[in-house]
Amino acid sequence: MTSGPTAGGPMVATYDRPIRCVAGNCKCCCYQEIFAFDGASNAPLGSVIETLYFCVPQYDLKDQYNEVKYHIAIPTCMGCLPNYCAEGCCRVPFYVYPKGDTSKEVGKIVRRWGSLGTEIIGVHRFSAEFPPGSSAEEKALLLGATYLLNEIYFKTQK
Image (cartoon, rainbow, N blue to C red; front, top):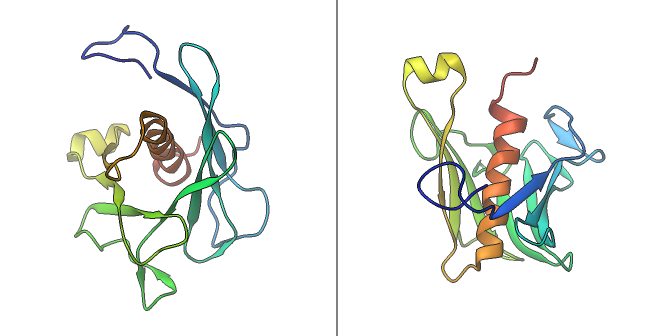
Protein backbone atom coordinates (compact mmCIF):
# COMPACT_ATOMS: atom_id res chain seq x y z
CA MET A 1 0.00 0.00 0.00
CA THR A 2 1.40 3.38 -0.97
CA SER A 3 0.80 6.92 0.23
CA GLY A 4 -0.59 9.71 -1.90
CA PRO A 5 -3.33 10.27 -4.45
CA THR A 6 -1.55 8.45 -7.28
CA ALA A 7 0.26 5.14 -7.67
CA GLY A 8 3.97 5.06 -6.96
CA GLY A 9 4.00 7.03 -3.71
CA PRO A 10 6.11 5.98 -0.72
CA MET A 11 5.40 2.49 0.60
CA VAL A 12 3.30 2.65 3.79
CA ALA A 13 2.60 -1.01 4.51
CA THR A 14 3.04 -4.46 3.01
CA TYR A 15 0.98 -7.56 3.69
CA ASP A 16 1.61 -11.30 3.74
CA ARG A 17 -1.06 -14.00 3.74
CA PRO A 18 0.62 -17.37 4.32
CA ILE A 19 -2.41 -19.70 4.62
CA ARG A 20 -5.01 -19.68 1.85
CA CYS A 21 -8.06 -21.85 2.47
CA VAL A 22 -11.68 -21.33 1.50
CA ALA A 23 -14.28 -20.15 4.01
CA GLY A 24 -16.37 -22.75 5.84
CA ASN A 25 -19.33 -22.99 8.21
CA CYS A 26 -17.15 -23.53 11.24
CA LYS A 27 -13.48 -23.23 12.06
CA CYS A 28 -11.38 -25.09 14.57
CA CYS A 29 -8.03 -25.13 12.73
CA CYS A 30 -6.26 -23.77 9.62
CA TYR A 31 -7.10 -20.21 10.60
CA GLN A 32 -6.84 -17.57 7.88
CA GLU A 33 -4.50 -14.71 8.70
CA ILE A 34 -2.73 -11.72 7.25
CA PHE A 35 0.40 -10.04 8.58
CA ALA A 36 1.13 -6.34 8.16
CA PHE A 37 4.60 -4.80 7.96
CA ASP A 38 5.82 -1.21 7.93
CA GLY A 39 6.52 -0.21 4.34
CA ALA A 40 9.78 1.62 5.10
CA SER A 41 11.45 -0.57 7.74
CA ASN A 42 9.62 -3.88 7.18
CA ALA A 43 9.03 -4.03 10.96
CA PRO A 44 5.95 -6.06 11.98
CA LEU A 45 2.81 -4.00 12.65
CA GLY A 46 0.64 -6.93 13.71
CA SER A 47 -1.82 -9.42 12.24
CA VAL A 48 -5.47 -10.22 11.66
CA ILE A 49 -6.34 -13.85 12.37
CA GLU A 50 -9.48 -15.90 12.15
CA THR A 51 -10.63 -17.36 15.49
CA LEU A 52 -12.57 -20.44 16.52
CA TYR A 53 -16.20 -20.07 15.43
CA PHE A 54 -19.38 -21.89 14.45
CA CYS A 55 -21.53 -20.23 11.72
CA VAL A 56 -20.43 -16.63 12.39
CA PRO A 57 -16.92 -15.81 11.11
CA GLN A 58 -14.80 -13.88 13.62
CA TYR A 59 -11.34 -12.32 13.55
CA ASP A 60 -8.93 -10.80 16.04
CA LEU A 61 -6.75 -7.83 15.17
CA LYS A 62 -3.47 -8.15 17.07
CA ASP A 63 -0.63 -5.66 17.45
CA GLN A 64 3.08 -6.42 16.95
CA TYR A 65 3.21 -7.83 20.51
CA ASN A 66 0.43 -10.34 19.68
CA GLU A 67 -2.06 -8.56 21.97
CA VAL A 68 -5.68 -8.40 20.75
CA LYS A 69 -6.74 -4.81 20.05
CA TYR A 70 -10.02 -5.32 18.19
CA HIS A 71 -12.48 -8.09 17.36
CA ILE A 72 -14.13 -8.25 13.91
CA ALA A 73 -17.38 -10.14 13.23
CA ILE A 74 -20.42 -10.19 10.99
CA PRO A 75 -23.56 -9.00 12.80
CA THR A 76 -25.90 -11.78 13.82
CA CYS A 77 -29.57 -12.55 13.70
CA MET A 78 -30.88 -14.31 16.82
CA GLY A 79 -27.31 -14.41 18.13
CA CYS A 80 -26.16 -17.31 16.00
CA LEU A 81 -26.79 -16.70 12.29
CA PRO A 82 -24.87 -14.25 10.09
CA ASN A 83 -27.00 -11.24 9.13
CA TYR A 84 -25.59 -10.25 5.75
CA CYS A 85 -28.30 -7.60 5.25
CA ALA A 86 -27.73 -5.68 8.51
CA GLU A 87 -26.69 -2.63 6.47
CA GLY A 88 -29.33 -3.11 3.74
CA CYS A 89 -29.25 -5.02 0.48
CA CYS A 90 -25.97 -5.28 -1.44
CA ARG A 91 -23.85 -4.25 1.59
CA VAL A 92 -22.07 -6.89 3.64
CA PRO A 93 -20.87 -5.50 7.00
CA PHE A 94 -18.13 -6.69 9.32
CA TYR A 95 -18.24 -4.79 12.61
CA VAL A 96 -15.18 -3.83 14.64
CA TYR A 97 -15.47 -4.15 18.42
CA PRO A 98 -13.04 -3.24 21.18
CA LYS A 99 -11.21 -6.15 22.80
CA GLY A 100 -13.56 -8.03 25.14
CA ASP A 101 -16.75 -6.04 24.37
CA THR A 102 -18.86 -7.21 21.43
CA SER A 103 -21.81 -5.05 22.49
CA LYS A 104 -20.29 -1.76 21.30
CA GLU A 105 -19.40 -1.33 17.63
CA VAL A 106 -16.48 1.12 17.23
CA GLY A 107 -15.86 0.74 13.50
CA LYS A 108 -16.79 -1.33 10.49
CA ILE A 109 -15.69 -2.72 7.16
CA VAL A 110 -18.49 -2.84 4.59
CA ARG A 111 -18.46 -4.39 1.14
CA ARG A 112 -20.46 -2.11 -1.11
CA TRP A 113 -22.16 -2.84 -4.40
CA GLY A 114 -20.40 -1.11 -7.26
CA SER A 115 -22.38 -1.56 -10.43
CA LEU A 116 -23.38 -4.49 -12.60
CA GLY A 117 -20.33 -3.94 -14.80
CA THR A 118 -17.81 -3.83 -11.95
CA GLU A 119 -19.39 -6.84 -10.23
CA ILE A 120 -19.17 -8.90 -13.43
CA ILE A 121 -15.45 -8.20 -13.91
CA GLY A 122 -14.68 -8.76 -10.22
CA VAL A 123 -13.98 -5.25 -8.94
CA HIS A 124 -15.01 -5.00 -5.30
CA ARG A 125 -15.61 -1.80 -3.33
CA PHE A 126 -15.23 -1.49 0.43
CA SER A 127 -15.52 1.26 2.97
CA ALA A 128 -13.78 1.23 6.33
CA GLU A 129 -14.71 3.27 9.37
CA PHE A 130 -11.80 3.29 11.79
CA PRO A 131 -12.32 3.27 15.56
CA PRO A 132 -11.90 6.71 17.14
CA GLY A 133 -8.34 7.24 18.35
CA SER A 134 -6.94 4.29 16.40
CA SER A 135 -3.24 4.55 15.57
CA ALA A 136 -1.77 4.52 12.06
CA GLU A 137 -0.63 0.93 12.70
CA GLU A 138 -4.15 -0.14 13.70
CA LYS A 139 -5.57 1.53 10.60
CA ALA A 140 -3.05 -0.35 8.45
CA LEU A 141 -4.14 -3.58 10.14
CA LEU A 142 -7.83 -2.80 9.52
CA LEU A 143 -7.01 -2.24 5.84
CA GLY A 144 -5.24 -5.62 5.94
CA ALA A 145 -8.42 -7.11 7.41
CA THR A 146 -10.30 -5.65 4.43
CA TYR A 147 -7.90 -7.37 2.03
CA LEU A 148 -8.26 -10.65 3.95
CA LEU A 149 -12.09 -10.51 3.97
CA ASN A 150 -12.11 -9.74 0.24
CA GLU A 151 -9.83 -12.70 -0.49
CA ILE A 152 -11.83 -15.15 1.64
CA TYR A 153 -15.41 -14.18 0.83
CA PHE A 154 -15.64 -12.16 -2.35
CA LYS A 155 -12.89 -13.04 -4.80
CA THR A 156 -13.75 -15.72 -7.31
CA GLN A 157 -11.79 -18.90 -6.67
CA LYS A 158 -9.80 -19.99 -9.74
